[in-house]
Image (cartoon, rainbow, N blue to C red; front, side, top):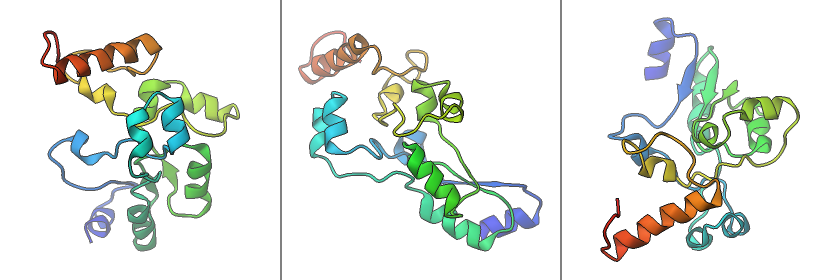
Length: 166
């Protein structure tokens, strides 16, 4: 109903998301599209035992918006492979896809895809980039590996009550 109202008032496209939230960090899904072997291979042993979060987790909202609207619909939320991006568009569930966290790790991702890149993106939705929000500049803390070791060192010091933990 809100989307139809907005369309009647002249919006030219709609990016579908989950709605009102108190913070971005509370709304986004961690580790979307990451299966056990990828988690282990990317140094996320703790994730190898967690519940799988599928890619494109707002896709049902986009599908519903497409059925109700005559304006382009944009899907955001956990798109982590070119195969799922292609499927979202070819199925008609959305007209465009959008990403955020993958651009933190790969600022040139759109160019890579345009040049033929296929498969998973490098971002694993670990959300470590948000742990440093307001403290350090926005960046992916998974690369190089030394930075990830630095982050885990801070976690361990915090868990053990050591000095210097954030």
